[in-house]
Image (cartoon, rainbow over all chains, first blue to last red; front, side, top):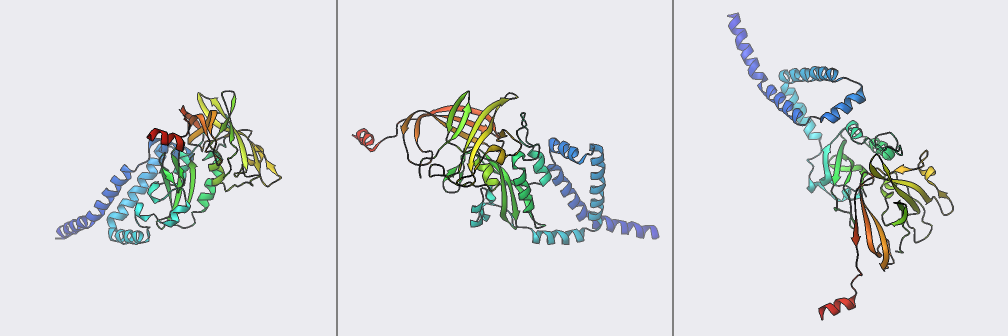
Length: 200
Length: 150
């Protein structure tokens, strides 16, 4: 009788964890699709002075613990997700462009992807064989990069990379003769700061 | 606007004029502005650039500058970039326009005058990736246009 009761309880617990399992599976697939390139991984490992085995163990423990928490307490995760969603800026698309964007070279339509400061620094190592650029991320623009990061004052601020293709019009009078690339700070769906790292 | 004094470029052992301002992005990103000494130099500085080959690639370097901090004080390269005798323009992606040959049409404004041809040099992050010559013709006057119609 006791064994049968436990079995039923286990069944119900299994059914209870199904939404959590679906959520964990969804996030695992999403993480896999959005994983860093090998180059970025190697650079991040070099920066943090870790081996790939150490990183795998740390990731395994972190993801394992998070998965167990979600399986057991998925209703709390749903509540947390809705609260996060409510505080996030609206979806970013061309329609969000307004007059405020005109202060900057880029607009919301030029944003490519959200990026962490460390990733941006990894992507912007400057190499000059003659040594005529500082051996720092963003080279001669390193101080400007520091000023941009200092503008990220609110917890919900996001750092986005942007790209404007060659021959695009910037403002009323200018067409760029080369690709324009840089980083922008997005706050509540608006650009509040930018650093152009490449332009004519 | 008065025709503007151009930047200088040393390329292939020659000094040529440059109708592009590769330093503009650097100055803007760092909030640096200079004083204009006269109407032919609204930007307040004149830079000297050189394309130097290193490790099999030609790169753009700023090798000198005269920048007006105010009307009397002129800043040099070492003032703007302490510790550097040359500055790699890794931020520059785009085309440099170097007018060459006979002046075909003078325009009293910016870099709008037309020369026989333009040497166009395309850079990607300060590295020369392509160059070509763009031949220009005399601009069509109202008279020539009316003759063509007849």
